[in-house]
Image (cartoon, rainbow, N blue to C red; front, top):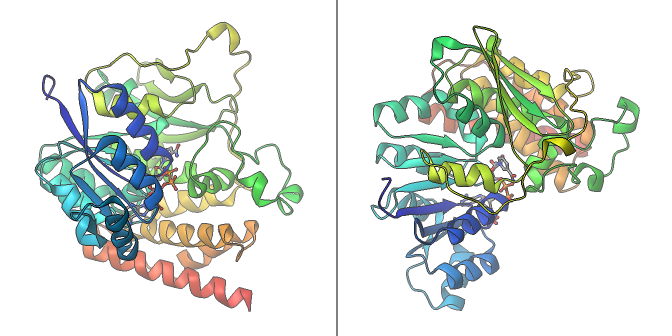
Length: 388
Ligand SMILES: NC(=O)c1ccc[n+]([C@@H]2O[C@H](COP(=O)([O-])OP(=O)(O)OC[C@H]3O[C@@H](n4cnc5c(N)ncnc54)[C@H](OP(=O)(O)O)[C@@H]3O)[C@@H](O)[C@H]2O)c1
């Protein structure tokens, strides 16, 4: 694959990661070619991407919007719905599938793409939280590779090159603490949506930004790391690091610590996921160690940020507990974004959903899909009851 043009399809091309992925592809016209784009409904952005890249494969999840895009673009081959997404993921013209969508709609296409031997660059951590055991087993079985885009996991992935599994003592993911790290519990009760959505370090989509404010994002990342690197939970740690200069640490058995640092620019891990195992030049701001100042590292506060504790508990319970955690969280965050739920009620929805779930270990894809649907329904009913 090193010599040939890499043909890329991007699920979630209109989102924050998706658009940055297209920028990376545009910066390397000699090495990368965009052959597929897929989104849920934002046809204005898809139309601009069509005009800019003319990819042969285009899919819109929402069928009405797919028809609208076909009308405005004059393209008769716009795919639609779950089948359209699946068709993009497994198309023989695709070498690398970038999965950067929100929600769980890309789970089956991801699984089928791995079974078709596609290399995957994965931003959608939720899919690993739901089905990490299954996905990583299939990656092994079908002899393909899965390279993380999430910055902390991209950091671990890079630090671990050349480190044998038995040489790892502990893996640490860092987190800036998000927009509310400096707030007291009392202040958090009256936080506005605008404050929650203003992340101090990263510009991201709304769902992950809320997850960063509750620290659920770090909980999801622990579970993501558990599967990506096949390391048990007791050897995974979250550390709050407000400067967000170090993205992760690998502690080796001999006491050596390896750290990865880079500017807070997602185009760096995105490009690495596309260039791996090579490293290509990139026009990004450079780090200057003399200007970093003091780097601080703290234990996370599980009292003020109960979502992280809930994620740790679900990770401990394992199996479908993580599916229920993710479904309840996704539902609660969307209800919060739509103004139907208070910020501090997000963990309550998740806790009550988890309380009602009896996890099963080593779930099949069908079980995962069914628990995902159940947890979303259950969380929705709870939110609806509270509103009345
Ligand atoms: N943003 C970051 O810096 C960052 C960093 C690390 C990890 N991640 C992870 O990357 C993923 C995407 O995050 P984001 O911030 O880029 O989100 P975002 O800006 O909200 O974008 C979500 C994308 O997913 C698409 N989408 C949703 N459902 C879909 C479906 N059923 N089929 C096809 N496309 C679908 C959306 O299409 P429409 O535009 O049409 O709705 C949009 O393109 C998340 O899992 C997040 O945790 C993001």
